Image (cartoon, rainbow, N blue to C red; front, top):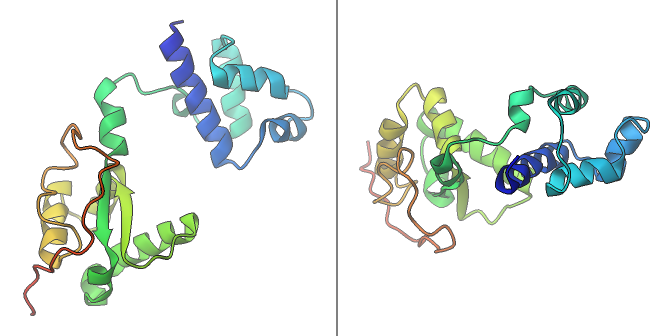
Length: 184
């Protein structure tokens, strides 16, 4: 197993463990010693190879499909799925609930999970936008266009979901763009 793959697999294992709110010691305690903290930690660091059998058993322990523990082999997917999209929450708050209700509820759930209540902007991932497109029964590109019209996304975000995500994530997007929505 290549070192890069071992590290990517370890990162997935760590992410799943963290999502479940478990420390390494918590895994050992919850499994009644079946999974030693030192062993799981070495899998997560990529220092120790994990067999298919052990990976399958770990998936059962975490209650997730084995496929969730495996890193995505597509190199571009990591860039696309981590691309941040910045929503203008002030514009979102001024939209009628019948139009923006699902987006407002989605954003408020993310804020609650992050304990982030700055109220001005919220960054989401491209994957979040794909989920929202399903809720709105639109393609991601159609939803992106609608969000720009509503003033919730800054102009220039077209094609962000399907793009390779070349933009620099750390470069801030100006949260003070103008609303581009006409009153109805």
